[in-house]
Length: 505
Figure 1 (cartoon, rainbow, N blue to C red):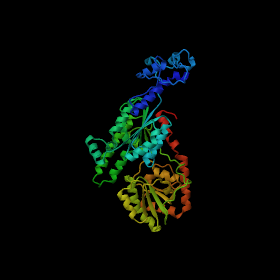
Figure 2: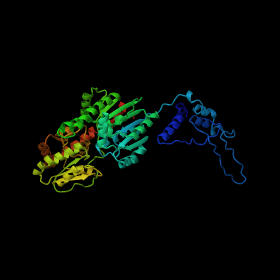
Figure 3: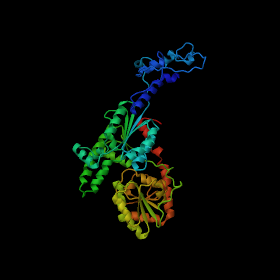
Figure 4: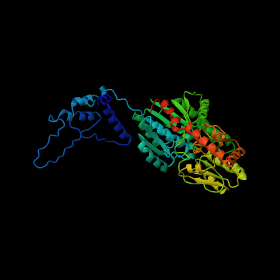
């Protein structure tokens, strides 16, 4: 009790409860019943309590006299009633300005461009595990966007009990409108696509309460919500160098009518990324390759730009677990997984179907290729008309398809950072054939943990090699899983967050 009083624990309790109520939109607060003239009553007045008379009701057995229930009565022993001296020691009445302020707990504001739950795509996998890591350091406020109301509802149901506060707004800016607005205002289109007035208002109101001590922003689009002035530490997790991605698009699409849009975005976004990085305490990227690229582009050093890699949940992605049987049929099966309305994934499967699969089918006429992932575009769905091609659309669990694969392929022509699809496949002990771009961020040895191929002929030969020798393919898969267990646990990958924020778990 003495230690609690010295720390003004009661004041902190009341402040925190009222702050939480205000964040939830409450405008009234019931302090409970207190007797006039007591220390608790005086204490509550210090917090804005407006007394309202409340009468006591009692029922007496026939013939019984009323008991003295006045808490200030001298008939009640001191140990059983409020004592003014004790109240004063506890800091309840009367001069709040004379009391030392309690040290507030750390609180983290996590800004996310897509609500982290469910962790069923690359960005949400990283943000979900980052949220869990931050929650071990301090209570976390989450302010996020969602692509659809259904996504927002699912995320709210899961995350609300886990957060200090949670706000998820659905973004509703159409791409053509965002492009027009960005051109008029001279800013990146990416920022316009993720701008939301309601979310900005919520963040401003939350920060105005003064309890947030640290901010972590996930994905460059959320940097626009960072306050101009903030007394605590700020981390910016860019994940990838998005401006470099648009520069690659511009280089690849020189003959396309909208090539200038990609070139403009690369320039505007690159300038914005560098500006943000100079304003925050640390910038994070998913691989050392991405961090090194950003250091070169921004001119910042290793003390400001850090690699915090992705991990993989090897307990969940474990081939020993029971799995539903999928993908059954004649012929060996190659599998690609990913979000199938994402341009690099679309280009990857088009290339595989057009140039690589025909070479494989020359040797294995019944070879099959499964494209597994949500939101396939019309052009992706059209591929299932071709011999040997399967397009699943969204599946409840990607693991059965990985388990069924004789080879997992990642023929990405453009890839940034660490590909979660590769970590998942390798954790499932599947042999992997990846392009050099896809394999760049993975700390693994080509030829031992996976196969890397540059062109269509080499990739077709690598897949056929795995189809030819199932024992060698299985051995490579086991080596890949061992590498994932040793190198890519999420706890180890995200351990630097505490030091970067100046917090300890």
